[in-house]
Image (cartoon, rainbow, N blue to C red; front, top):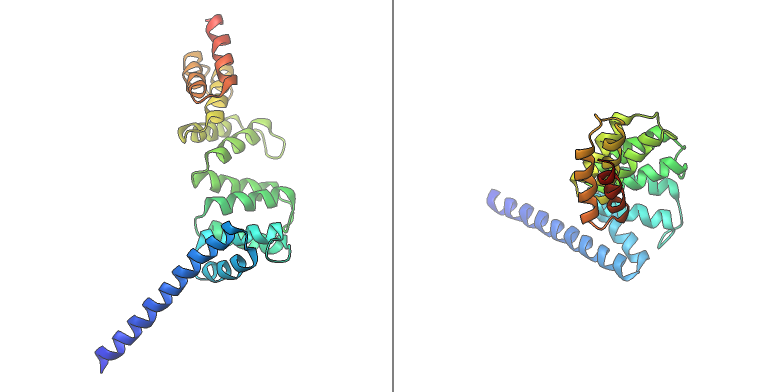
Length: 209
């Protein structure tokens, strides 16, 4: 009797998990096909069960007003769930909402916090963007050490702009010890990735050496 009950419970669990898996697949298919109402319905289910990617796509639907009524507060809520679940895109999009004051109270520090999480989650272009924020010092306190740190993360992840910007600060000695040889290595790396400004900058430094 106990074995039969266990088999029933296992069968119900497997059936439930299969249904969720199908909702996940169908939700993204509907999203990609532009059937946003169906996508919102299905992604709500899979987000509720803890799928971070579903939450970030659902947040996008609320921010864009596709398949659901436009609601930036809801978008922020779902982006936060996505970010908490380890979805880097959710962190990035939540950072943008805090930067612009959409659906949440405008907060540059919160924006930086979530953009930094997105960077740590592997979004190289976000690392480059955060580095530039620290370099410019417009929305955060200027910090050249942080600038170098985030540009390095971007470059290590294959972002050409990050390599270029890191090369520039090695040339100028801001946040790092001035080193034209290191600057050239980084600029040449960015140039190889078809970042044309780096090719010109590298040539300029070579002429002065």
